[in-house]
Image 1: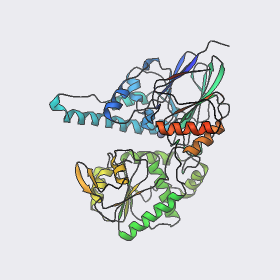
Image 2: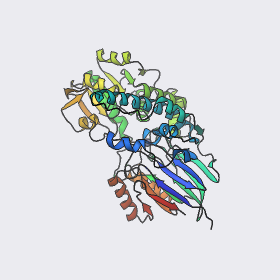
Image 3: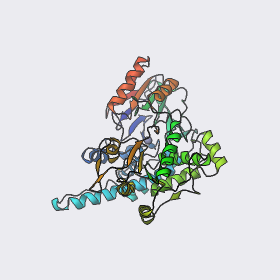
Image 4: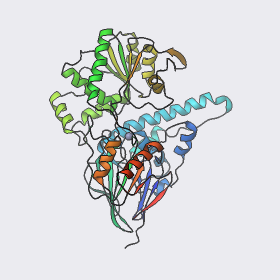
Length: 469
Ligand SMILES: [Zn+2]
């Protein structure tokens, strides 16, 4: 026995899906696993985002699982508030995070300006959560790291990033450290991908894990099969050609946009669809697709994708897709007639350039609005998905004459079957913590695991602390 006490505190994404942030204390060192933004209504999210329940200066190392804002989005605030620790991430994540944080900081500044303008008469004002300078400060601490190679983020702690299969660059963090019971292996999945994905390698279960901290977003759901995606998309494109219609795909800039482009590229190569003009209208999606294209031999991509990319030479269609950066180019699409396909952010139609494409085309019967991701309650995307016939865009009411269709095939997260396969393969010796899931999804997964005889499954509450031994 020794006197090393190790403990983990769950400070976000505990019984919810945003604000991932877990603090590990061991060997006299403090390691932060992710520092994500809480998302939701301003009044709830804002205070959670602005307060740290630990001193940022006390952190010795920060491990970032992937570049989604609910995992990396508070890094700028962490560093502005005194953290001076190295920020470890895979090199793919490091590069994508730079794009995501630059965008997030611009949104924070614009959001504060908007709030202050509409509340000026009441003398209410807020400061942006952070600025581009804060983002640059955090990014200056980035230590890009290879997959599958050991490093020492703190004395006596051995770390390794393993492919998580969720988005490009995403990693599970494996940590070996001393506890009062001996040396233990901890695996934090971050967000975990599916057993079958379009672009990414399946996450493999490492051996010898004692404690597993795993997400549970879809702990109560099964996804549709991925192979159905190409056929459905081909059907939508063929119909648009017949009707001279426009297809508007509100899409998430990271991963989903590249997946859709990759499917279209394969359909065109096989001559399964007629060639129609395709536009990607989102500066962030363009920057990210360029990173994917440049890094398409990266470890996290699966062999089938790599082989296709080598054979094709242009898996993201830079030869024929029009990637639009300027506002003028974006607006010029309004005057063009179909058929055409427009991929534009944001994925839930809550902002971004997709709004003006929706405004201009939603009243036309030949338009197809194709939803390709999760639509949260209350968003314009969800209203369209629910078949609501009158919606507001930029404050004006519009009748919905366009067809609205949803592809449920896409998801970057493991479903309940994938989670169960992964957990059984890891088979942790001492305990499982379920995080990053709404209460229903998490309890369903916990119950399913109990029914399968999996023991020591815990559903930590926000702020709950556990000793690891
Ligand atoms: Zn994610």
